[in-house]
Structure formats: structure tokens, C-alpha cells
Image 1 (cartoon, protein in one colour):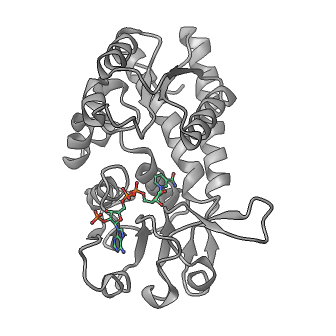
Image 2: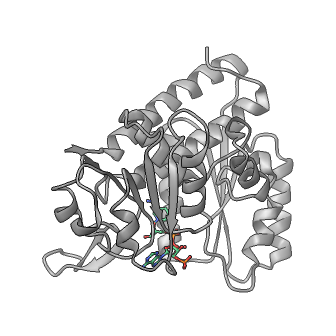
Length: 298
Ligand code: NDP
């Protein structure tokens, strides 16, 4: 059984990006810049934003965190995004979700220039993903990270049956869309399950590649998995664990102990898909920088 080490692969990607940052800095005297806007003081969002900024700095990219109060108006937030859209030193813009209730998240997504939308949430990027123009768009970082994990672990996807459990706009749908593309490292037959799917196990048992992205702790048990399947666990769920100092620990959507006994490859939680999400965000920011300056690695 292959334990897919997302942490190590993400470090490898970051190291490759660091080399590119240095190469481009020598050639054009500039580095890619990522601006992250955080609204309010949601503690989980603050951790995510800190981690993104830290990773940016680690590889030599420019990072800017813009903190706005929870009371900020939608108009003022959109005005701020407009400033970043116009700033040539900003190559990636990300607005951390969730946003306060008085702000329409879709309006905010639409306000970000598609060529700086490194989260890949803008409909122009989503549309380009659907029609297979992957070179010409940004893909949502988590599913993009899953495809990169499969590629780097040399897991065959062509003609395989990939079952995605979950259909959110940021994970499930782009995951399914990616896997069905007629492209190398994808090209699978895809089934998507969601909360209205009766008997999810009937579908998951047919999967050669199973992607669990439903946000239900340890939902996928060994009985739901075909022996020899590749299992990708996107879920991040906090459960009580009295043996831990904090009284909590993180688990995925897959019952790792049971499923790892029958899978041919599996991602752990933590240390699987999670670190890849940030690595792909940095990769998207680099892609934006390359497009802006018409650069290719030397
Ligand atoms: P959402 O809550 O937005 O979506 C969950 C999806 O799962 C929905 O489509 C829902 O169906 C479906 N679902 C829920 N329960 C069931 C069920 N019993 N059977 C089948 N389908 C079900 O979550 P996200 O997509 O945002 O995230 C999914 C998980 O991934 C979460 O644990 C999240 O924390 C984690 N995550 C991890 C990331 C990482 O970097 N590793 C990044 C982003 C998310 P319906 O549409 O019908 O409601």
C-alpha cells in the first residue's frame, strides 16, 4: 500500500517554485505577488491566511495580507479588490471565505479580475476548466492538488472509474470536471455522488479512484471501497479525542484505519491533500506572474 505523502510532494512543488522565483527575479527583477483579503476575525480563517502568507514568503514571493473589519461594506470591499486588480505588482488575489452575511460572496468573486483569480472561482475560470482550456485558466487549488498528487505518484487515471463524493463548487464539481478532461493525467470515467444519492456505497465500491469530499468524519468505511482502489481523502473534520492535549484531532472523510488495509494507495489526514492546496495556490500565483510577463522557465 502506498501512503501518499502530500506534505513531501507539496514541499517538492514549493522548492521548484522557489527556484523559478529566483530565476525570474534575475531575469526581470520582479517577483510574483499574492494579496489575500481577510474580512473579520474568524480564527480558522486567520490560521489559513497566515499559512498562505508564510508559504509565499518561504518561496520568495511577495505576500500581502489586507485585514478588513467585519463591518466593511460590500462596496468598500469591491473597491479594494478593484485597486488590487489595477496594481501590476499584484498577480494573485484571494478573498478568504466565509464572508460576513451582509456580503454577497458571488459578487465578490465576480469583482476579482479572472487573470488574477488564483482561487479559480470566477465563472470565466470555471467555464474554461469545463471546456478543457486548462492552460488558459486557474483551477480551484484543492482539486488541482489532487490531480497533481496522482500525477506525481504515477497513478494511472486514463479510462479508470473515478467516483467523487461531494459536489461543492470549490472541491467536488471542479474535481469531477478535471478528471473527465481528455488530457494526460485525467481522462477518467467520472461519477459524482451527493447527499441525494441513494446508497452511496453502491457507487463508491465501483471506484478505481475514490475522492471523498463531503465533510463527514470517517464516512467512507472499508466496506464501501473496492480492494486495490486509490483513495483520496479531501475531508478535514475535527473530532473529540480525550487523549490529545487539546481534546481534539483532525480526521478525514475516510476511515483511514480500515480503508488503508484494502486500498492500493491512500492519502492521510493530515498530511495528504491539505498541504497540496497551498502549494497549488502558489503555483497559480506563479502562473499568473508568468502570463503577465510572458515568461517561461529557463
Ligand atoms: P461542502 O459542505 O460545501 O460540500 C459537501 C458535499 O458533500 C456536498 O455536495 C454534499 O451534498 C455532499 N455530501 C454531504 N453529505 C453527504 C453524504 N452523506 N453522502 C453523499 N454526499 C454528501 O464541503 P466542501 O466541498 O467545501 O468540503 C468538503 C470537505 O473537504 C470538508 O471536510 C472540508 O473541510 C474539506 N476541505 C479540505 C480542503 C483541503 O485543503 N484539504 C479544502 C477544502 C475543503 P449536497 O450538495 O447535496 O449538499
